[in-house]
Picture 1 (cartoon, rainbow, N blue to C red):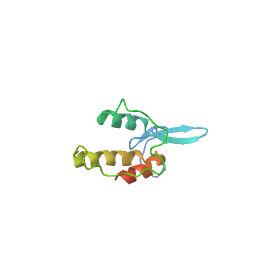
Picture 2: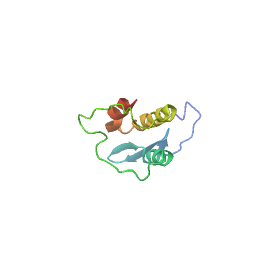
Picture 3: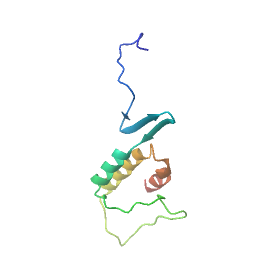
Picture 4: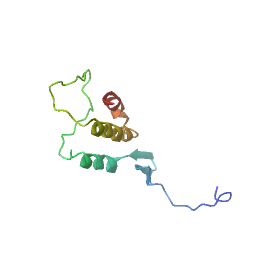
Length: 100
């Protein structure tokens, strides 16, 4: 392609659109560890409790009528941020879609 188009070789790809790319002899692996860390910092959840499953099987979401009201714009922003994270975390796709 370099013969046909004016371009330069930048070496192996490390990041693409915020997605970390690791190329090894075993394959190409993607992740968003840095992005996930930035999300936790942004929404002030650095001290949250990690879990292995994003949702308990059979869990039903219900509206808490007596709960504290939240800013719907802020909620939509968080869901959008999480949707981008699901590009490499397919295990979270169902939960994020449920929340949206």
